[in-house]
Length: 311
Image (tube, rainbow, N blue to C red; front, top):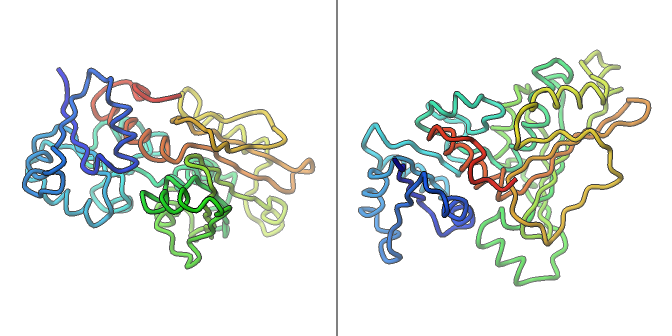
């Protein structure tokens, strides 16, 4: 028996990628609206209530409004916006962090932010294990492909090939910071420095660690190899998150990068153990958005979590 899925916001970047991952899936039937009714609230409300699963690929306010249109206790929701990531009554949709059984049983799941996915994956297990302090003032440096900014940013980069680098979030109020703080159990919100580069997809997120300085101040500070082993143990047995044991000379994002739903983690350490760099690489449209939504949908539908993913 197939389950019905309605993607509200199916013509946006994330919605299109989700639909592409579900297109050949016999377990699901996609409910769609004709173009002329796509913004008709009555038509949307009908589809929202008819579907077994709804995936919201909308701006925050529109996502909240869509949830309010659902008037039955049966429809289960995955919200790809940031509207409900720290909201009461919603399950944070990062199975590797909150537990696959938790996602499978949830009625309302909020997809993580792309940057947040990387930061949480790197830091949460290490804080939980006591290898990093919860009360340290962490910094996060990150670059992303421009597709994460939606149609307007995509058009800006593609119309102006002279843009080499876009620094933003300069008001230090990026919408991913609350979930980054909560899901890692940190006392202080991290200082987050995101940027956009002229590549359609791809993302690198880095957390620098002054381990010797932490230890000098009496803070927990595991050696780089201990940090790597902790992450390897945390994600053992899964196919989506890979903790690499090698130490390459460089990590590259390529403009020709193809869609993928992986999350690759690295730990680099100084030879004397005084410093380390935690680095995550992912597709901002994959595990950072559409791939995560499909992973959550699979779990909620009782299917193998990697079904339909591009690994």
